Image 1: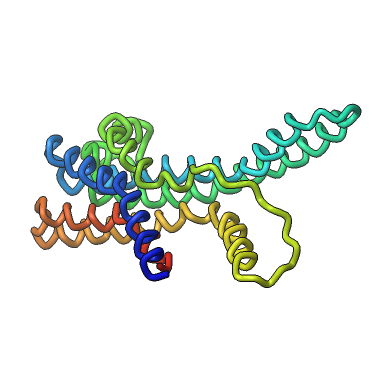
Image 2 (image 1 turned 135 degrees about the vertical axis):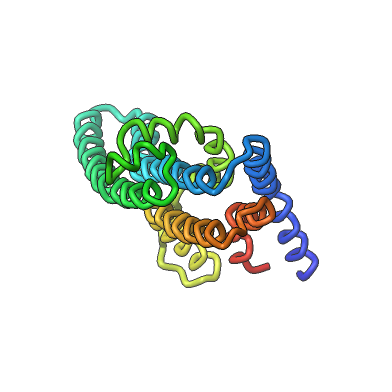
Length: 240
């Protein structure tokens, strides 16, 4: 039993090699582009916004995708009107969630961008003319830091993994059934996972700001922060 658990634990860590690749890739981008604190905080902001919003879209449309697959494989005659009605209702619910999180999640990042524009302006001349970033600032952020997005998506790849089909809950109280119910409930938390990244980004931005003001913004500091950012913390939550 212990041998089996140890083997499973090693297997999970072996599967974490993309996280190591993302870590090395992030450091390589920062090193070769000679990024400073301003570049690092804005790259984190962009990755949090783009990857987080992609996660929201993926999670919000999950039920609709599952229904579409099921409806497409069901060839029962005379069910098309019912499928269209149910699909419309699910689609409407998905759209409402997308609109809500677009405003809410986007508002968080807009607030962060105002803060960053004051203390780490990408375009210093724009800081003196506007309290909040203009279109030219956001365009410059995308132009400079889009290269960080692939490694950010790689680090969050688990959020876009296909979920197994949900078995019917028969109310059993076995360990397997309880674990299955926990897994299904965890899937419902996927919409809030991007907000965890917002909190992490917020803390890292303040860390970078403190390091910059303390004249500690060197590559070693960046390496430590990137290691924390890309470390597969989810593996520590799984018992062996």
